[in-house]
Length: 368
Image (cartoon, rainbow, N blue to C red; front, side, top):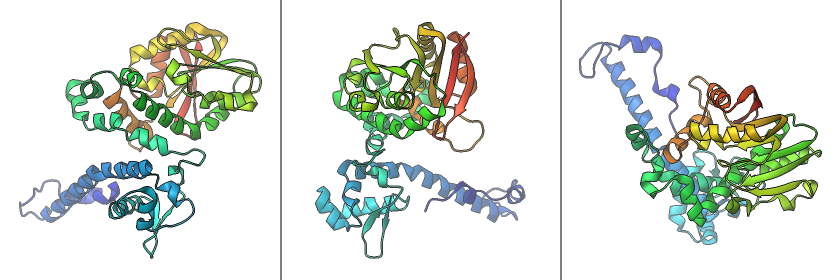
């Protein structure tokens, strides 16, 4: 079981009592100070070992363990036959996953999929399997191991490892591009309906989903707003895999446009930018937002759908994702003040920020 931070830190009075003692000094507070340092060491070592859990999660996703648990508990030997894996090694992976509630081992040594682990299946709505594989792909994993380079050189680690910038690499590597876009779609699908419902879209007009991937968000927006038309705008190799045609509720109200959003964007009453700005540095974001500002119809709005980093020390996914951006891309997660500054430089005004029940917020910009 992982130690919690509260277990690794004594109360203020105990800290004060040992503040002047050093290990081995023989002072009255020496024993207490040593104990606090031992707890700190145990906590930090346990945290450093944490990288092995996503490694186990990825391994389970790769061999489809969750799909073979859909009908109930199975032994590791039975699962190994079904997945073509080594039973002893599979058991060790499952045992670690059980410590975090993805699976559970019963008294007979069988493993069952828990409620928390259901989305690891590939055959359920909102499956997270491809998202897990994307997040733990070597294009994310290896740069994360080189964060020190980011600190000492002030640059992304990705280019030094792969010889080119992140999206340039994806454009020339079909396998990696597929992993990324399918994984991003899997990350986005559980959020899209919530975000579409969180904002009061106009009754009529055109919505352009800029860098909209396979069209999941645009589908939800059009489904909820029957008076709107939509355009999915992204690179040709991305929109080639769009899913808009399979949705009868939005038939006749969508179009696909190919292009580079750093060159231009289609005109719209609402521009959507979901998980786009966090990929890019400030100058690139200002360029993109300026294109959106120039293509806005009168009374139009730009909606940046991204995490907004909160103040304070509490955990928030944006603080974790920010290091992925630092390691692999040129962007970062931003505070509300950061977004306001970007909008101002692009000829927009941040009019409001609407939190949602997801990690993302709707940051609304209007023309000034």
